[in-house]
Every structure is written in C-alpha cells, then in structure tokens.
Length: 79
Image (cartoon, rainbow, N blue to C red):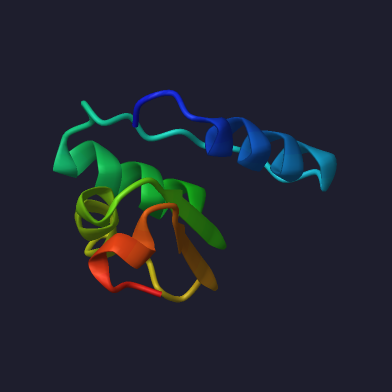
C-alpha cells in the first residue's frame, strides 16, 4: 500500500500494546501471502483497500483471526 498516515498510526498502536507487526507487501505473490499469514497466525489483519482485502481473505487461517480492518472499506460496502 502506498504510504499513508493510517499505517503509522496502526504501527504505533500495535507496538504500544506489545504486538508484533508482520508486513505483507503489494508485490508479494499469493503464495507468499498465504505462507506469511499461515506462519504468523495473525489475530488482526489490517489492509488498505477492498483489493488487498480480497487478496488476503482467502489464505487467512480463520481459527486465529478475530478482526479485519480495511481502511477504505466504506467505499466498497465492506464493514
């Protein structure tokens, strides 16, 4: 995702509660995304747009994930 204020806010919030931030880049292949999500067992997933949300939603291990935050969710009808 391009640089935006929300990433800095999320990063600082995560670090302030002792969470570990695991980045996934826009250039990551679907296989890489699936591996990172499987290996890190995320409880929270933050994504920028409906496109990145759709890319990550499939490989996310649902047993660990409790919340998905999408910055631009309102634009696509996601809430």
